[in-house]
Image: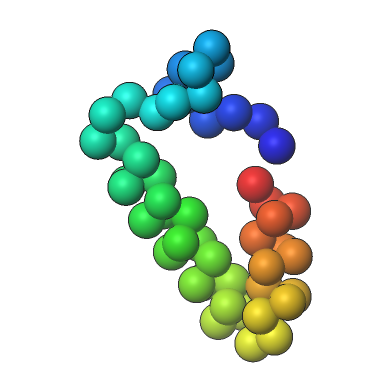
Length: 51
């Protein structure tokens, strides 16, 4: 898993105010995978492979 390009590599912190957008994007991708894979375990596994 690679660090997000906007993440400060020294502190592993995201710029202030950016994290909610990243979290929302990740969650929307996860929920779209849930639509493809009704089994939550499969959706989670596929989600982790795409990160």
